[in-house]
Image (cartoon, rainbow, N blue to C red; front, side, top):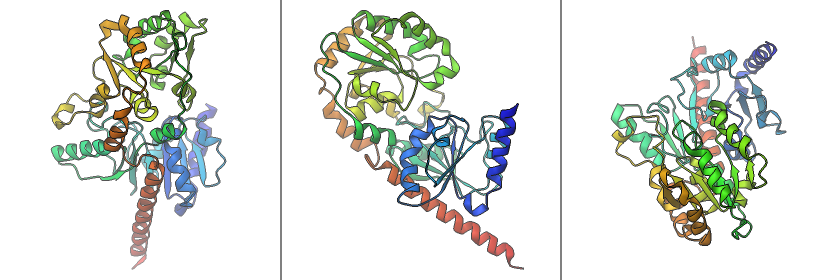
Length: 392
């Protein structure tokens, strides 16, 4: 197909760049990654005056349409050119949010390269993801101290070489705090509920999504459905059934763009289960979250071996209320109760942020400076190898 040849030409264009221009590479799996990378990229290409090569899988990635002369974007698609790129890329540092690097089809390069993982939520490292998801990285940009503790504990248990752990933070939280605004007043008819579940077979949409939406709308509230993008990829029918039933209801809306923020700002309460969106909403916007108490979202059967409670478990009753899935009829009552006293959980939020999140308000600067340091170290090591290779 034409797209394959276009992607292959793009890959060859990347390879043709002079080696010293291929110093810092960002690799995006989804167009959603741009919104997490952007605070770091802004400082890296701004105050630090670095040039970045941005390799993405999606031709609709915002990086393909931005105007910075210091960000050069390449779309290699999701097929063989991307696999080939990962296998043979030559650069000094590669920054990505890809889970399971080295475990699935995307391998570490055969060339010397420093791999940096940037967390894309505040959730812990050891329950929601496979136990070896981060084993093949050299550096972790940690959202908070819990992430580093979890990575270190696994290294101790498995005898893994220690990674460089950078106190980074979480750019999405910074963005929400910087731009938050109070929602419109919530009288009985104007309460706006945001349904933002995680993805997977034991999450709200496949288990009880229709009942949650029906119950909220029947109570006279507005409801905005904000499904996880992985749900659209993996089980679109659970979204489409809800939309087909409520499409004509003026109090129902659906948002599928991660960068959209109005539904976050203008709603009064969120419903989720194990999604990182609940942490973003509660800690960033200081508004209550109702957690439907569905089974823990875990891709690691051995997570308890670390002896550390996951952040997403610890924080749920501190940001809102837990509701068993067999008590969904209580949702309207619980929504009204939480909205009546919007300051109920605000006292916890500042303490939680201070304890669990690094560099609140300045994560982009911290991440960019760490990447720039690693890139300089790697370049110096590369030049030393080249000089030594030139000595007879």
